[in-house]
Length: 60
Image 1 (tube, one colour):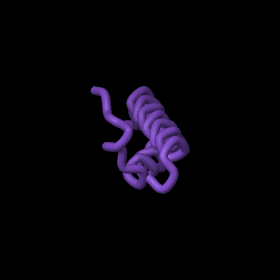
Image 2 (cartoon, helix red, strand yellow):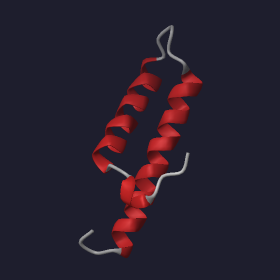
Image 3 (cartoon, one colour):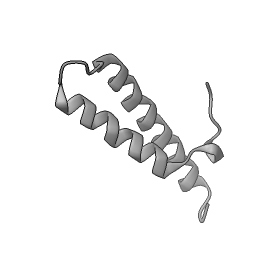
């Protein structure tokens, strides 16, 4: 599902990124690597979109 840049919660995206990175670093049985990689990609994209918006709208 698409998200508008103004809807992105940067703190939440950063937390999701950290969680996904931790899941991938553990490599424990039961860790769904594909799901963790997808979560990491989603959070990185959200952060990129938020950063682009921040650069376009100073003070936003």
